Image 1 (cartoon, one colour):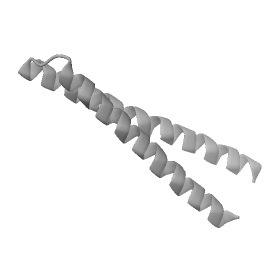
Image 2 (cartoon, one colour):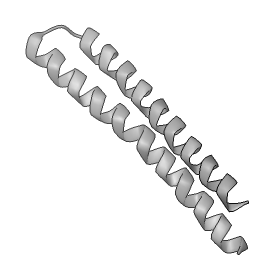
Image 3 (cartoon, one colour):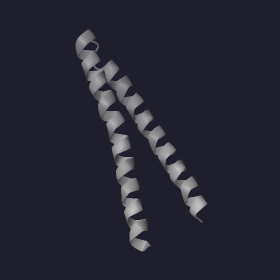
Length: 75
């Protein structure tokens, strides 16, 4: 039982890290691409980075609240 809890926590932390870094990286790449296309450096990159950070925190909130609900059901 204890190993299962430890593994579950490790998986959750890994998921949180991945679900936070992917939106930030994708939005940064989109912002850089658009800045290079329309020559508006660095404004679109900054805007898309902020959107990526917002999406990352939304994902983190969603995943942790879902895990907390699952934990309450287990008790």
